[in-house]
Length: 141
Image 1 (cartoon, rainbow, N blue to C red):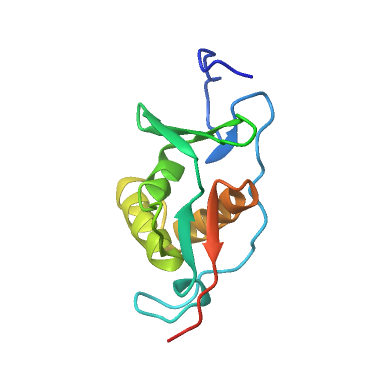
Image 2: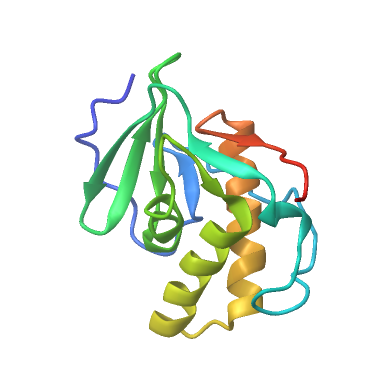
């Protein structure tokens, strides 16, 4: 099990990856963002919450996550950290969390909001696959 004292390699990293040498690809959901603010999207009704027992530490603007079941560490870069900061253990609407994080990312970096939303949705899907978050579909009201 990594002890957290290893130096990360220089250069760009994906938004999420194992703390070890293997990195996640994060290419699962190829949905294109549609509509604009206030548009009804399926994921606006899904609720996302931080997985039970998942621990997070903010280290220089990046976030390191610890999975409680197997002790695996995962690293989120600054972009992924913006999404993580929108989440809570009690749950938030998936679409709203993605849009808020994408707005912050697109304001601070050279990326447009639709591209940022697409990337952050892919990251959220990866976090769910790794059981770091849970996504609960909720019916439209």
